Image (tube, rainbow, N blue to C red):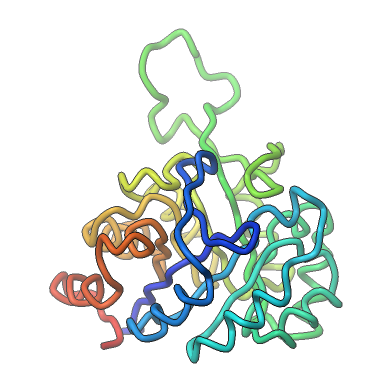
Length: 267
């Protein structure tokens, strides 16, 4: 059985790592270069760096910070934020990234997925999906309580989780895979930063529709949450930020806990 990956995520804005809850109320979480060095030493399997305001602010990613961060890691390094063209992908890989994460541009200009995969290989192209639960059209909203899983769907948001779309997340991941995405980074906006657990139903439905690896994101609070995402959500990797950035636990401790659950990890 393939080992499952543990991936810390650096959400970066104005040159600092930040972490919020449901994409708001961000607090400082340190220097990205220093955090990257720590995660490399901590046996993280990969590292993700996301410039979370680049698309919203209509600017290019901060390549100097990407370059300095890449110098600290010797594990696969994924970078996203403000990528709009094949040339952007080229510049980010030249700065030290092994893969690029595309979110907003993948929705606005889906052909970028095809072009990126053709130029750099599918293994380089990670399509990020920021998804939020909504009741299905036609549901009786007069009933009390949240909609059960069979009566909800997930819509994709863009621009760092600031712009809603009518794109159905489950349909979109199928198209993204067909266009050449080599991996999917799936974030539940409802669970992000809550440390209450991943959206297992979202992960499971996506994993059952695609053949490419799925990275679970949004909601990690405990080892048990990660085990659930890997076992029941059928994810291939789990991404976390808050619990690692603020040293509530370590990558090493998470791996040891997952191993005790019978989940194969690299130690």
